[in-house]
Length: 148
Image (cartoon, rainbow, N blue to C red; front, side, top):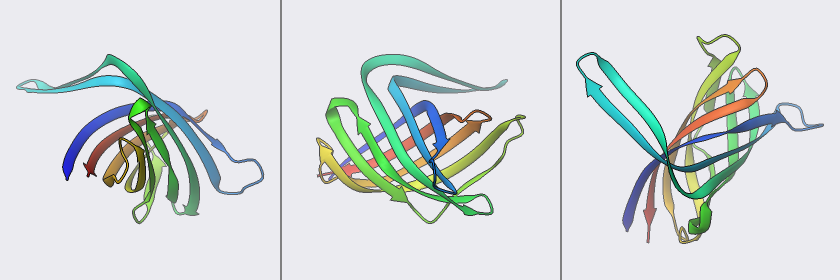
C-alpha cells in the first residue's frame, strides 16, 4: 500500500439542523496550500500560503451527545482526485476557547470508504478546529491515508 500524508486548513460554517435538536451541519472548503513550520531560538514561526490547484470540500453531520462531546460522519472531496467518507473514532470534544466568543475542539475520524483515485483508501484524519459565535469554522486536518 502507498502512504499519503498531508495537511489542509478548511474554512466555512457550522449551522444547526432545522427541527433536529443537538444536530449541526458543517460545510467548509480548502484550496491547495503550503504549510510551513520553522523552529527558531526566539519561537515557532508558522504560515499557510496558497498553492493553487483544485479545491477540497467538506460536509458533515454532527450530533452533540452532551458534556462537550459529539459524534460526526461525513465526506471530503479532494477536487478531481476523488473523495473519502469518514466517521468519528470514539468521541470528539468541544469547549470554550481562551479567545472570547470562540469554542475549540478536536476529533479523530476513521476513513470508511474512498472514490476515484482514493478508491480503497484507509486511514485516519485528525481535526483541530475553532467555531466562532456566528458559526464560522476554521478546521485544520492532518491526514494519513493508505492507498492500494
